[in-house]
Amino acid sequence: MTTHAKPMIDGMTEEGEKLNSANVDIEHAAKDNPAARLIGNSKEAVKLMNSRAERVQSFDVADFPLPKGREEEWRFSPLKKLAPLFEDAATDVQDGQEAVDYSVSENIDGVSVSTLAIGEAPRGTVLVPADRPAVVASKNVENALHVKIAADAELTEPVIITATGQGAGRRGNAHHVIEVGNHASAVVVLDHRGSANLTENVEIIVGDGANVRVVTLQQWDDTARHAGQTDAIVGRDATYRHVAVSLGGEVVRLNSNVRFAAEGAEAELFGLYFADAHQHLEHRSFVDHNAPRNTSNVLYKGALQGAGARTVWVGDVLIQKQAEGTSSYEANRNLVLTDGARADSVPNLEIETGLIEGAGHASTTGRFDDEHLFYFMARGIDEKTARLLVVRGFLNEIVQQIGVASIEEEIIASLDKELEATDAVAATAAAKA
Image (cartoon, rainbow, N blue to C red; front, side, top):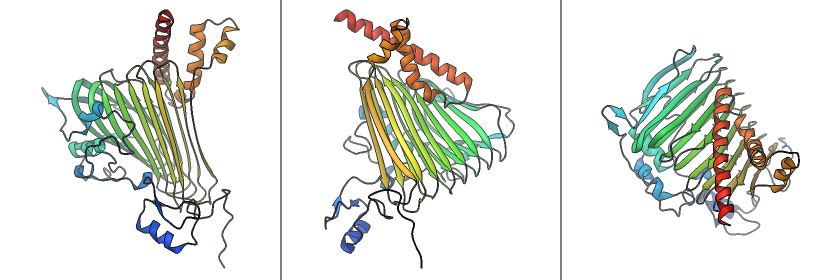
């Protein structure tokens, strides 16, 4: 006789959140309509918002009509600013120069760089476009950049892909495939600078036993607009870390997604953002626990200052029925430094089995803590330095995840400049008062 282990989550059965399995009619209703969810002991299937995993994915542009802002996926986004990125448009080329110029580190042992045409594997095996900017990028990139790291390679220096926008308003489309062989160890950095209107896809294949860290830096000029989708699949007993740092750009909207090829893997998604006046920085993450006994951790931290500064974080974690033994946690922390700034934070957690190690989520948004400031000033530290120390300490947890000392120093210097602007804003407000 087959026996089942006791569910590890109080109040849940092995069937996760769908607790009303005794009612066959309700079960059939839920199966016929994937958007149906069962609530309490009701005999009716109640239609709620679709699961994150049930949203449209397609390589056909026609499957993604222009968003109107009422869709769950777009209700926080500035559609007017993003409108150029919804256009099914080819990459702008002027005098032989594309809108965004890409360069890759050269002469690194164990690293090969080539291109992949549409339909040429492994392109398209991991990433399927999940919104309109992603699908138009997929369609309009004839040859994707393919960075392949050989199996068992242990890189001692990062592979840096530098994307330089050639002018405000110029349209760029990009697609990258990063393939890391079994048991390899590597850091890959994707650094965005200059200005352009860019749609960009990144798909990442992490081989069995590999250890890979992918860092994406958004250090755009103030006029840049950037929408990106990153999808990773993590192999057996592999470790994958993704770090997104967004400081520049008029509007940046990034989707970072991960799923698992086998058990025993670990995935961590980190993010850092600092929004100034009238700047919109939006980050979305989706961890799909589609295999048993894997671990995930998501932590995004951000700071905001100035009138119209806006940040958005939406984190989704899905633990599928077959993902027994999962351990997962996601959190978002926001620090509002001045009046007129707004941070939206939405953690979502779907659990389809109670046989897991644990899962949770958290979200906090608050103003600068004057008690911390007082603590430093009481010990002889001036107010400006004290503010810098508090904010730097808040964000440094993410900076340390970059893993490249020179880049960490550069990001800290950039944050210090942002904080100098904060002091200027505070001084102006005090003078008006």
